[in-house]
Length: 396
Ligand SMILES: *Cc1c(COP(=O)(O)O)cnc(C)c1O
Image 1: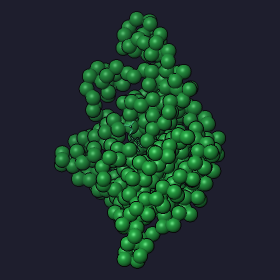
Image 2: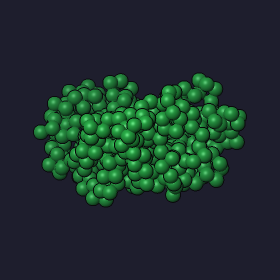
Image 3: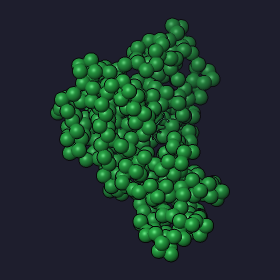
């Protein structure tokens, strides 16, 4: 049995998305910038996709939707644009949080080298950023607040509407990386006071390599990629029409089926939490109250996340220890450290992220395998022996 439980890393392309994109790979392959009528079909598909995405995220106009190569590019462009346009007015302070995706954190690092000052807010133990903390960090020279909608490792959801309202009141641009929220929970940019938002197709059953930057009318965008006049001059490069068409179709499908998907995923997630919590010296990471449906993140004391993943793989379970981008490095997750977990505990983390294609049988397989693998690793571990013989105190 192969169980794919890493939907926060990427998802399969849905049949709907695949069917929608195929004609743009085979018969309708024109370049939307060309003038002949054959290419106009591609142009029309592009603009229809833009309309669809605008409606689905509650944008006022399709002109506010810019297609990118993915979530990372959208994050880069949103953050650099706000920073650079702030700098022109003497505003060189940026606010974000410690548990953002690296697409955000590394962009902020780059801007620091350009002379920007960055405040990274602490995340509370429940994995939720407090509006008061954002308010306290705001200064006269703040050019941008960027706070992710839902965290990719622990699944906690942030008070986006309230942070947006605060920024609106103070006249500060507000960006949110909504990659993990879009298609999984209601997102409405106007109602939630969002000025800029990033999303990525491959997290909701569109192909990899396509995403969206929403930028409210009046937001000044700077180019990250120079080239032709595509995307209203803000993003050079021939548009990825098949990907864009698939993204719109997949987003529509996810939004339209959100309630039934959630109703299917929640019982599976809750069963995982309930059963895996029975493992002694384990801990659930992040508040369950403010949470996307599919993500389960737990720590098991005395084991090492990488070994756990390898053994799970051997038992047919695809999981992650945090974000796919940091796996391969031995550093514990920056997200779990931001929650205040000690290094030893953060090392033993497991993220299982479920989607609507998962089944209860698969969940049962995970529940059978994880406790066995955890005991096996603990029995081999000198650290565990120290904990069990009382040489070292248990931390959880
Ligand atoms: C996956 C992810 C990204 C990156 O999106 P890509 O399309 O893979 O570049 C950014 N932010 C979050 C929260 C993500 O989960």
